[in-house]
Picture 1 (cartoon, rainbow, N blue to C red):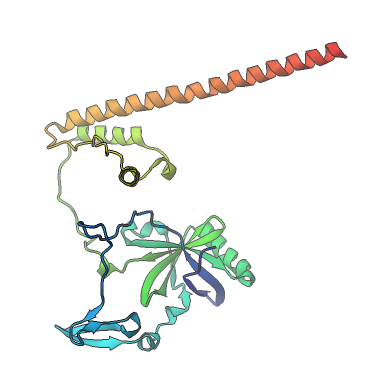
Picture 2: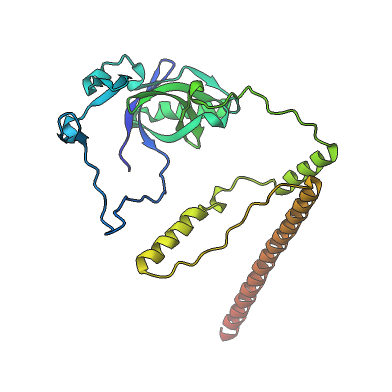
Length: 294
């Protein structure tokens, strides 16, 4: 089990649920170092104080807030600990709302929650109640010296927590309307038909990070000293000259893909029947052979 990044209590009315919080996501980004091009040596970053004209150790460094250009006020860990925040050790649910009322743009990071052994019953109660009511809990939590808005939602028999952005952190106004454009009924009909043709359940396992795979292949080739083969890339089209023609072509391509998928899916059961028939035939032959030997 990974190390818990936060421990505290979920406040649900007068019910207190001791929990631990763990990150539910893991970045798969390939990291790079800065090196000197001439000798491939990793560059070292030195913490240097221009006033004292010397290197500074980590133990000498504290947080500082710049209130004027070049003027700072220091903040120590003791100062941060004195902040009057009840959410430092408490996730107090303030309200319950429908999930569809929260625009996905507010979602930041996800975490999974592990209840204390003695609080498993109360934890399951909250999870099942949220699932039955089809609602999520809205609360606040202090993570890494910052109070964040958060959401508790049921997931199977457990509860996940997602941190949310505050409204003033969004860089657009969700209430602002886009340009008003009159769309011909035929174009809208074709677009709706195309959406219907491509409608499917969300299957995240079907999607892969092609950039990461290509980058890893490139790195393996560089490490092994092999030549790097340039892969053809899809070039985005230019200006759409005929929207109707593009929609129609998209529909034809979607139909072709659907028909191909149906043909493939029809072949699978037939193979299964053949295998089943062969198995039954072998079983019958074996049974006849046993009877004869008897």
